[in-house]
Length: 202
Image 1 (cartoon, one colour):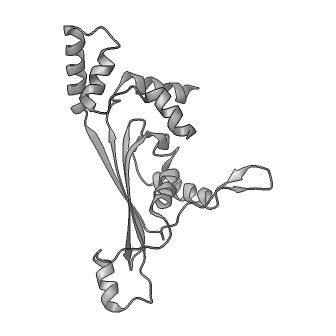
Image 2 (cartoon, rainbow, N blue to C red):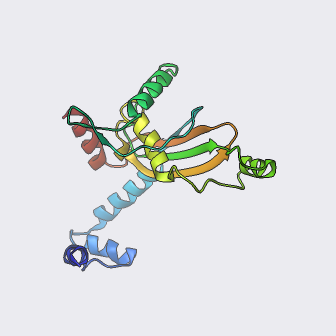
Image 3 (tube, rainbow, N blue to C red):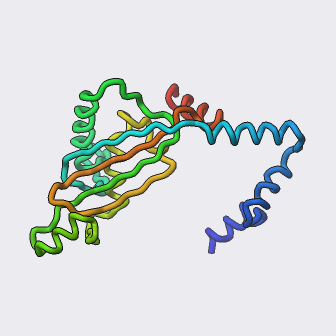
């Protein structure tokens, strides 16, 4: 298979064990005492970077991002995306001193879908308590994409900054979307700082 062959060609010699991979990387440079000290210093620095937290609740019925469509102008568009952006822009105006996120970010999306009216009362109670979960569409990944896209360019500079994420689905008689975000107060590396600043100024 071509994919396997290409992988083996590029990464076949890389060790499986993490400790062996670290030694593999070290073997490509001249390691010395100062290099080890720098590595320890950076590990401590990154571990000590504080993470800021944000929580939002949107009282809307959760919807998934549909597939892009080709418009009459010949450009692709995502139905509903503009409305979501408009809603979030208005929401942002009500919040003061909220900075745009430029650093690595964690994104957790909990979607509470409308409880089906066909459910028996006992099942509705169990669903509200989180014991019965939705196993129908919308898909969990599409829900997260909808709301990650919604905040992009307003609160989050680029959704590529999301390094960790979780999407969960529940039922509720009060449909809503709860967003929890965490982002670093500083960049984890000069490499990533340059990458984002270059993108901003390009």
